[in-house]
Length: 165
Image (tube, rainbow, N blue to C red; front, side, top):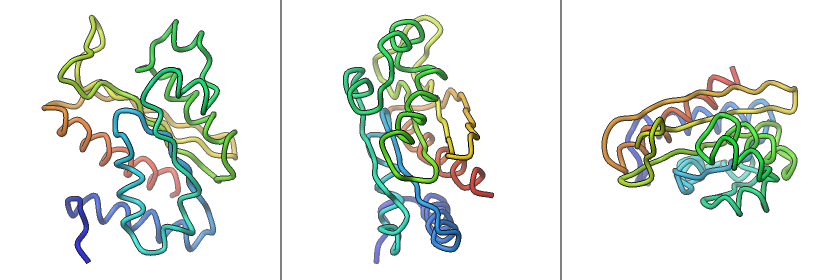
């Protein structure tokens, strides 16, 4: 079988699936700038159907509001690419799933979309669990659109793996 991602992505996705299978934990995802790359990496691993409970690709603000209950006030005050939105996406995914923990990602992959203080490559990632833990990271990844998306994928998988440890 050919894995459609680099080896480091494969190894992280494989470890996540194996760890979830052993622990009996499930994961749900909310992706914006990655557009389903995290779900694709996870579901490329055999056994993932027992691990990935569901995934949301919420590319627009209205999708974030309708599917994950991200408040219009958060989006208006902090924008879609913010710590507050990433946290709200992760919490909304918990509320709209049966998963034990969730991962969310929102960012500006480029080439457009940058504003003052929000450059291309700005990505917010968050992992949240039913136990109340919630971990956020902010990054500015260099490169073009695909570089940013792949960096967000790789960092997101590492965050998920670390959260389970």
